[in-house]
Length: 453
Image 1 (tube, rainbow, N blue to C red):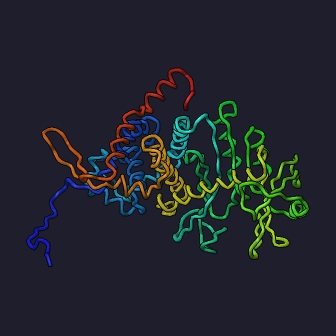
Image 2: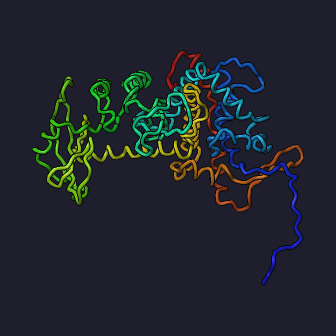
């Protein structure tokens, strides 16, 4: 039997190695679009201690989220990595107490500024990514269970931890790109659609119907006369699951159903017009009937009778009922996006006990999410654009590397024959083509036009 080398000395004396070699790509991306400078110019907040700038503190919160450091207490790991600081330009790394104080003190003034700037960048990048300005909106909410004593954490609907306090945030995504359009932290006892009407009014001002074609999908939590009226009044096509109320149940059981080509034989479809109580007009309802193999539990959007289950979708789409059903089922991508926020971006790791500070943290988390989406769509090959953040970390951002000095040059070395070498170098070339957002903002201001922003 062969044995390994027996005389090996171990020394912990190198400060030129890093597990975060691949983060250099993210640093280049942020540098080329000029985000740090943009924060410095657009975000204004007076601090008691000027040891760190506002942009440095924001970046110090975003980097751990992106790199998979889920708790703010262990961000010091990055502060102990000299190469990481060299790669990102952070001369030192704030302590967790500094970051928490920043969130608490800056919440009221920083949040509206960050949201306003975020919305401008969302629109700019959407115009680059989404073809022909055709937007597909998905609204949904989720439950974030909390086990501490945070403001706004109250008992509400919580299917996985009944009786436990929670937050109930609301999100909106553009489905084609996966980019977030909106995020709102809410107490755990609010209804699913609370805040939706206010957001949609803002959305239609930012994305007017003269410039954009918009489609909307929502589950039964958004089956609301005000939401439907607002959406249809802005020439927006929609498909929303309807609550199976008594009158609607009586109506759908008397319809004639037909199977559709290309669908499972268990499904058949019908359509009708229906005006719910207190609604101002009739709408088209597409009904989906499924033949049951076994009994299913009654739900607000699904009921069973004579071995069939029924569900209804209210819509103004000019499609067959089967195609409306298929279109609505594409909304599963929204659920994946929210699951990514919870699992990859640690949405549930709320860092403070103050509600307003946690609102600010959620906004910074959404910045992290969108930056990765923009990076994927604009800089990575097509087969990498749908990868999860967890996969990107393991295959790209956390590539081991070492810094060496050759003359006056700093060289970042990666393992020989790395399987991701071509992707890394290709992304580096694509990043070099990006435009500095500061210059775009200056030109837009000078010309007094907001063509892209």
